[in-house]
Image 1 (tube, one colour):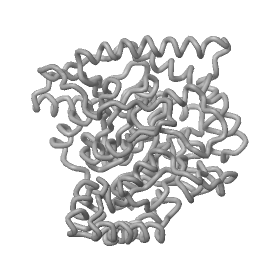
Image 2 (tube, helix red, strand yellow; image 1 turned 30 degrees about the horizontal axis):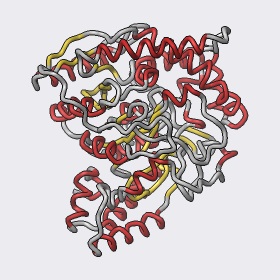
Image 3 (tube, helix red, strand yellow; image 1 turned 180 degrees about the vertical axis):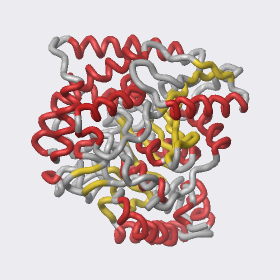
Image 4 (cartoon, helix red, strand yellow; image 1 turned 180 degrees about the horizontal axis):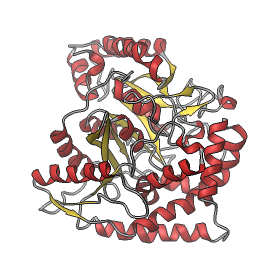
Length: 467
């Protein structure tokens, strides 16, 4: 097996034991990028010289007998909207192509301290507010499974890079599905952490973030195995006292009562749910039942109301400062998509509506947390539809379909909850997939259930582009 095909856990073990050098691991990864990235455009800024120098330093540290981090020598990528020292946080906008970061964001700093080696920056739509990873600065990222459908957004470059083996772990972030949707579209694993789990801010930022973004956006890894998602969580979750939301909570919480009860929600109210996605949820439920879980088909509370809360907060607060920036600096497709989104989900006329939505959010979270007292998790579609055709969001009807499909992806961020995306089943040459949503700070329960599903489905292996 080629080194770029290993998951992070095995690769780190081989490097720690001296059976493989960090230089060999990074060289293999860079060769894989040479081979497949020209077709995909998932990594849009390479850092070969920097990565090879870091690999040499990593090998020297091991020879000196220094303490090695859990990802020592493992190639990883970061997303273009997150600060990495010495590289631009361009957010896919031409205007910001030279906006160099002078300090790592906490999640990047945590990866660096773990011994991970950065090999590239992954693509996203301008300002990370589309389900497609395309922008005027870097161009379009293609889905390795099907060139004509989206690789997902906004962390589409991360999902595509992970699927083909251009790094063992790819960093992403998620305010409405942007970690989980690319995992689904590319057939890999991804973890959206819950609010407060991973410190999250850009040191380069000069303006305050909207409250909605502070409450809904979180970081997370794309991986090919659930155990790598668990490992990446442990690395990424190291604290930064400057982040007022970060919580010093244990990665593993109290054992849930037996028998382990889990809910499945194959059909999401409020719109269309594709039968293939419903079947993926039921299939996941069968895997869990075969492993001894008590599986019950039922919805968590207030699903349609939680989706409405996301829209009110998104349109009335998140887009309030971001919208004008998209219209001023975004590319034509980003602007068009944003304008259609606003047409379908306009900001509320009542100035108190956003405040009311925040109050409703707390009530809904209380009800979901109560639900999780009896069911350790709920399994739902990752997206309510199949991966969308390229640029579907550039017509009014197409954007309506996108927002309809996204409603299930909005639930976890609206409440600040974790969600693990895992592939389950297939539909033609694409994977179908589910997300496992749990209560606050219980990523561990989602990972436990995800490992059961993964054991039944088989591990994700890197793929070659299908064309």
